[in-house]
Image 1 (tube, rainbow, N blue to C red):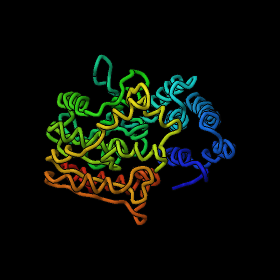
Image 2 (tube, rainbow, N blue to C red):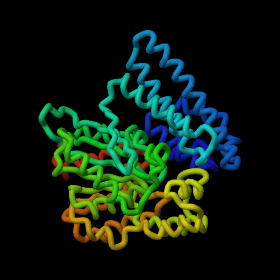
Image 3 (cartoon, rainbow, N blue to C red):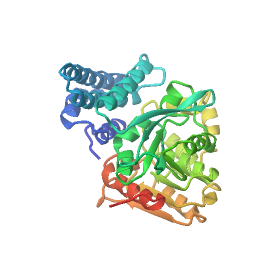
Length: 387
């Protein structure tokens, strides 16, 4: 794990995620060098300072991108706008719920991401799936080489507690899958991304409620093989995904990138100051995500967020992965999920070690080898290709 700030795990996590999304080390140095003292400040003051430097760098990149556009250098402009979007998302993710300007910052991030991918001609199409009077937004990435009239296997990819579809797209799994003949649909499910920030759709423990709607939509998609739709989840998605696969029999396989078997227990341990928090303002954040009125209400909701008695219902191939040194979710929960996959015809537990890299939470410290392992497994399972 790259530790720019020796005493601030949450900021280090954010910097590592930005690197995985394509941040450049020189730009990270420029953004982070002024923040050494702010990293030791209380959450509100510190995150405000973090936002100022990262937004400033995004502004600079937007100016440079405008010059590229004026000169007709659209791919270069798109690359800079995409990086600017990554920096805005990194800053937005650390802000408190209700912080002044947070929604506007998020909206600007969405705009820059869309403009950047369009100018760079990326294999990335925004889609919207009607849900509960609003929409579940997603990014559709087509399998490489897919010809008109052909259908490809597809992996639905869901967020964790504080990630977004764009973050998961930038880390690279959709690209690695496309190279292997598998399409992707990366979504902001309720409780994450646009669903939470723009539509007020909070998380729910019965994830099959929205997962089934997504599968319904994919079954009508002309480029998707409805018999080969899998599901993957990262971090808290290590709960969301197994629950969805267990309760929605149309999924053909499942993968967790970081197991999360008993999130209710994780919350109890965090109340006792055990383990690292993924975001500042943690308790206010989880109440927002789950639509809880207060801490008592949140802890009541969290009692449902576990997989005991659920994983046993999975009857399709399933891959459980975990970082050996995960400091947020103990490795024991990966073993628990694997042990309870008694009805899966093809179950596998892969623990990433120092030898491969990706030992931290959901491999945020080094996603390349871990992501390739997952992409290969999915292609082999759903019928893509690995050569």
